[in-house]
Length: 129
Length: 364
Figure 1 (cartoon, rainbow over the protein chains, first blue to last red):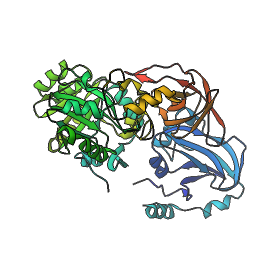
Figure 2: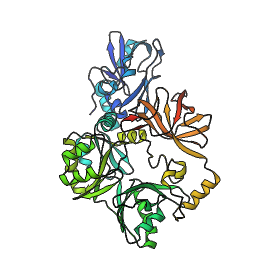
Figure 3: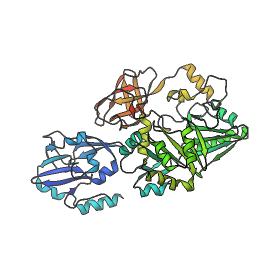
Figure 4: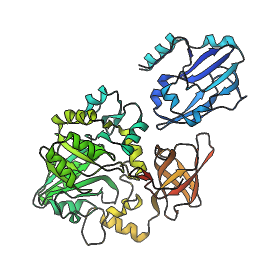
């Protein structure tokens, strides 16, 4: 079973979001990395990029396939995880920790509550079988 | 649910991700296909290849029959145990399958064919065997494993009995022998030393478990694909199929047209050669980040080519692929592929193989 930490929020497209003060940390879920297999390249957004919700903002590429990462909320990219470019496998080994992708300053910090909670994300995974 | 090999339960217990391959439920990887790839290049790994089918060809005219149905000439097999790689062609010179033929006795050859085309191969062989009074017998009672990597023989020495070890020690590349209940061959699909074994399906699970206990790393189809790709080896259904000639698939070396031997597809190949071939198969390596994918278009001074197999090379840490290009395309030429968002990825044509025996064979 994929790990789904209880303190995070999730999207239907398998991103996770962690609150860090007024900002948000964004990554891809354990389920997503497990489906994709060994990661070999990560393309991160540029600092300062303004993202609309649902906008493609990063690409993760595994031996098997390439996949877009979508902005879970509208906001500005304020930090990216540069360490991933030299160690994309971190996305496999620690998707919720060292494998974070970027930090976002949301236009509307309250919007995070509209994302899926862990229970809702788990039922989504269960329904995807 | 697809067919399952006698090792299916072992794969599931080891946490394998199972995928369909040619109608078989096979392990893609057991956690990390890149780690499995490196294990084979640097130490030793073990593959379940029981989805491939052993087929016995028996009869006084077995040799004549195979000289007629195979594009390679089994007359190259003089010593019992010697193996030959080659293609089964249709009348148009298209490839029905690629296979290994082992010469066992004057009236007995053993073929190893691919999983997907196996049933078609068997009926094709039977149709043509009647005229030669040759028996075609598939052997689903046999399972097959491949132990591959620089430490393959050392692992074999710890697992196999003294008789099998002695046989393995004496076995030259591309030769096979019977030892007790098993059939051991110096063949593989990784570009590393090692061996393959055909054993009774009932006995393969304990044998597999002994190799794993001795530290041999189970490796799935994911690693098998990147290893064969680095080694520049073709995969049926990718580099060749019924629509493509072996002469355009980098397999001219497996077609013997020098004698007047009549074989299926011969006249089509001679005609192609007389008219001039228009395409050939070669390799390509990306100059920067990215992964090559089968089906991508490749553009260069030579025109347009198509990637037949593509991936990420764990050994080179670069995207690599095999590509069918216009015949005039030269290795070394620069070309481009379209990236995901339409950007051009720079690449260079290179003659495969990319990696053999743990070492890169191309300059990056």
